[in-house]
Image (cartoon, rainbow, N blue to C red):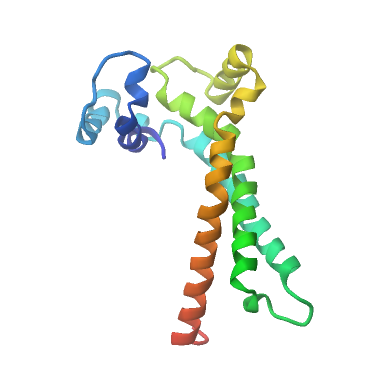
Length: 176
């Protein structure tokens, strides 16, 4: 999520308004007015930080999943013949490794996107300095335990669903 689009999600939980105490956005539709207030550039606020989170985290996610699948494949068998428990295990661990990489830049992105305009003129560097100075390096991993508890089952199910869908599609339209 970035800029105005992130506003829809954050309005629902009140993150943006919590800092000021002012109720400016009471409905998701109110977020459309951000464009009128701040212009097109604000729609993309935090995009670089989002990419800094998603590119390495996605690489870790899929790399870990494929690596674990190859390790869990019994000798003489194909990776495509993995059992559901092995797929669940590989997918769950892939989700955990994804979030280990993604949480610090995610924290920076959230702080940057919800800050008042102009608070961080140097972008994520200013956010990082302030977070570490005020709350310590551990602040980059706030919510880590909760994310990990959710990461394993949700990503295990996601990859199992993907593998089942691929098998079905290959059965319906082989060689496509």
